[in-house]
Image 1 (cartoon, rainbow, N blue to C red):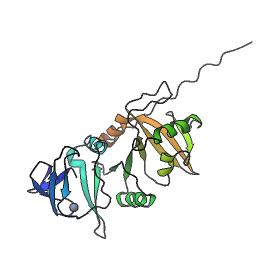
Image 2 (image 1 turned 135 degrees about the vertical axis):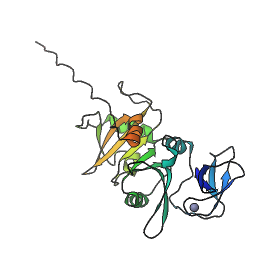
Image 3 (image 1 turned 60 degrees about the horizontal axis):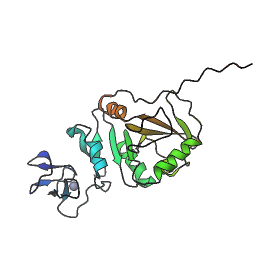
Image 4 (image 1 turned 30 degrees about the horizontal axis):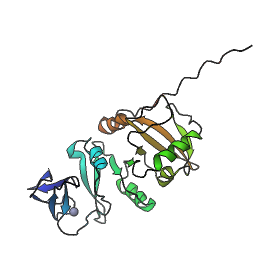
Length: 236
Ligand SMILES: [Zn+2]
């Protein structure tokens, strides 16, 4: 974890410092090696949040886009199960950054636990996901939406299929990625997957910064305009 309590105050890991887990109160050790991100680990083999995943650079970079006091927020269920949300916004939306694989069962239980939440998914974890997603777009019809988007079957490609069946917004971050559309930038884009009835999904590229701003301030998420329909040429 990024934060532990040191003398009751949330602090990042620094060499030699001992802290306690804000989740379960057990002792934590600062891990400040060269290989992994500096983080706190439980001193014993306690796992207080079974949903917690080791943080990647990708994970930490996303988390750091939000105020420190919104990061790693503890939640306790009625059965006293503890979970630590990656980010919880001022308006109460939980943001989970998901790098590793997650089973549909676990996804459903996290959605139920946090209720108001969004997923931001690392689309670059598996090399094959981006090319097959790109292929799927080639054959898909445009969605009838204001922003440019596509209507896909929710089994059309693996990354889309893996996230089907959920009921919360999913944003896939492929990182810098080329798509064969001149109007679409290769940077600063994430893909919003909106699962709709009858096994379909609307895939909409949106400005990454607008998703961040939406979570920070409630500003609207911005997609890309549909290319204007060219005037039909009159022919004799
Ligand atoms: Zn703990």
